[in-house]
Image 1 (cartoon, rainbow, N blue to C red):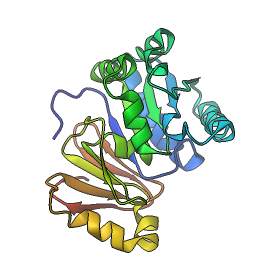
Image 2 (cartoon, one colour; image 1 turned 90 degrees about the vertical axis):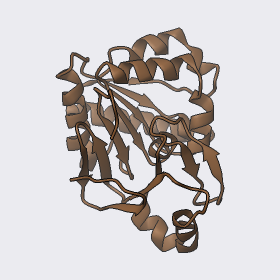
Image 3 (cartoon, one colour; image 1 turned 45 degrees about the horizontal axis):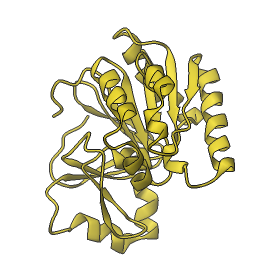
Image 4 (cartoon, rainbow, N blue to C red; image 1 turned 135 degrees about the vertical axis):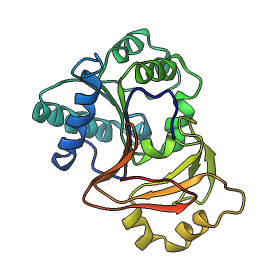
Length: 228
């Protein structure tokens, strides 16, 4: 259970900004607008910051297309360094936004860029006042207390928004690609957090309770978390 949490949180396995995610992203905006937030969708591509300009342009275009389908304003914040996370204009941009969305890439780079910065503090304040906060793949992983490196088999510090949760996105795909590493993550002896596997094109969303959205499944791999 998340206490004192007026904005929604979405942990998304894959598919951010795609047509199959339109209904979820529209609902996240609707929830925030009902709490007085603007019909504004903030894109944060930080996790892809090491992938080069083509990758960043790809995410920017995909988000712009989704904004047209939804019918909302889209603001793209290319936060690539910790210095960027001190930008006063971007701090102002998130204040009244309805949906603040972290897309995929490298979750460790994302967490290291935002941790203990003014922009992260502003995002948390916006969420506490009603904004919806979403993370897909790397974004979902970074929200937890620990980041499980399925590809690299290491553990890193997350942003601690959800300190008692760890996430494996693309779970249906990773289980087929790297079953041994998925198994190792589940049976980790030093872990006491709830471990959640989220399939592709699937999300676990908290409003008043946890709910599943999308075509796939949510797997509680370790610990105890109820959802509908």
